Length: 148
Image (cartoon, rainbow, N blue to C red):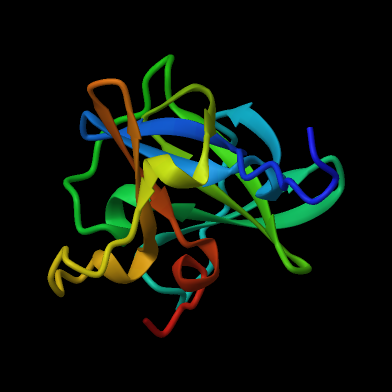
């Protein structure tokens, strides 16, 4: 292999929401937990469930269903909280279930430029194609902006 050949494969943790499969760059994932007791914080946006105390650290928790304007769902045995770190900001997202770690090369990731201007497109950085599946890859920087 030549020295200037760059490996363009990235790893994504995949999870499900409403039967759709989403992916997050594994470099942003700190830990995956079962549902944690959440303390509601007044005057926060509706999609912020509240905060949790995880090993002494207070972490805000976002309900991804509410963030994407999906119907609420009761937690199940499969429901997970993915603790993420974007720059220095640590937060958690509630998802229906975590599926797997997926390796995607650059040539299997499509841009979202032609997806239109639906309200959730701003949170999407691309779409990964794996066999006959489509994995929606999230842009975490945009996802954490509260005023968007």
